[in-house]
Length: 221
Image (tube, one colour):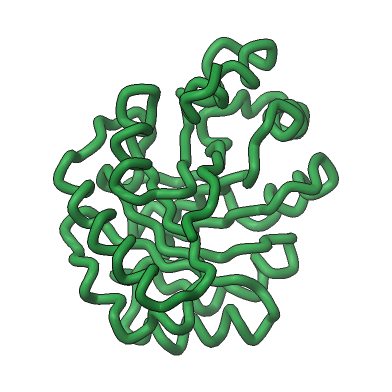
């Protein structure tokens, strides 16, 4: 049975001068997860923040911290993100040579684990780890920067992964990240996504608009 569609606002689009208050505001506005995009300037062409910032935000909400690690190598840093308060740690399939080992490392700390696929990476690369993951993240833009346009070819990948997840019978989130707005969100949902990452579409207009932004993304009045 399909899960209800949920929203994971990406704090990359928040006001960094007031980040704690922003996390509280978006949580109270109806966010299901808080999406934390960690970029290293190596695996992706941008640098964001690390575990120290995540740890400082943990006191501002009790929402799930959905930590997306766009870093390579990733294994040496996993313990720091666990300590910082991550609930879900998502790794990139393309970021290392031993995906199964990385998955097992996250799980050894009692955390949920996700695997992310870049736009050119096929869904089939996850066939042998579907019995291990708790979340699959489809990147619908090339990772590294916010504000990019949704890549339509990823809809077929979402459909494929929806079938793969359903066949397992397991409770696996199917997340989509990149170019999600009121036009593209329904397309991703129709293809099978049940967890949407939204940056500017969630945070636009300031805190007074966050609840309405989230409802609009979910197609609710």
